[in-house]
Length: 187
Ligand SMILES: CC(C)(COP(=O)(O)OP(=O)(O)OC[C@H]1O[C@@H](n2cnc3c(N)ncnc32)[C@H](O)[C@@H]1OP(=O)(O)O)[C@@H](O)C(=O)NCCC(=O)NCCS
Image 1 (cartoon, rainbow, N blue to C red):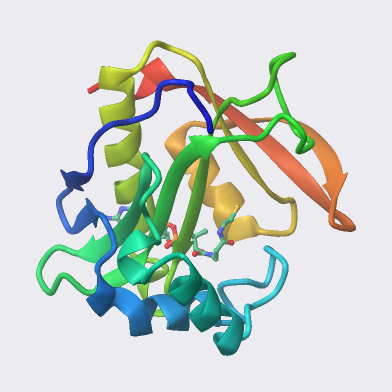
Image 2: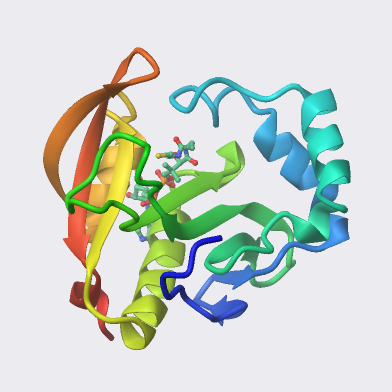
């Protein structure tokens, strides 16, 4: 288990979205997110519905899907419907793409339902989580690793102020590693 300090918040409100933990009622919208080919184009292709259902059952239900610190559902603040998922996690040392010798840097991961793209919601979610993390944790590097062909993800990284620092091959595709310092997000 990772013992490096992580964001402790379990719910953070932004202007239009709420970062919160998953509930069992999110199940269908989460499965739709995990099985949408548009969402998974640059991250290994969509999961099969059967596999996603089995995994959710294996972990003890949808409410456990965001149990790790820094893992959230992005919900519509008005309807509470799941719009996506957002993770502030640690980039495992045995994965490629690092800026420190020991790895385990903070890293962002984000998925939005296709019908929520193009409205600035991922930007809002990321800014809100990074600000909370900057207020709680010591300054340190934060990474985004994304396929170079994933222009929407690279666009989000650039809007957030991340700089591309290197490229590397992973799963037969070129990835771009983007870097920011956590305290650049202090409110
Ligand atoms: C990556 C992803 C989260 C980006 O979503 P997004 O909606 O494009 O990103 P943002 O939240 O930054 O929104 C930016 C867009 O909203 C528009 N926008 C509208 N209102 C806005 C507002 N109030 N604030 C900011 N942007 C706004 C911007 O003009 C921009 O539109 P454009 O893309 O047509 O130029 C989304 O494409 C996705 O889920 N992709 C699949 C999963 C994936 O690949 N994840 C990355 C894994 S590394």
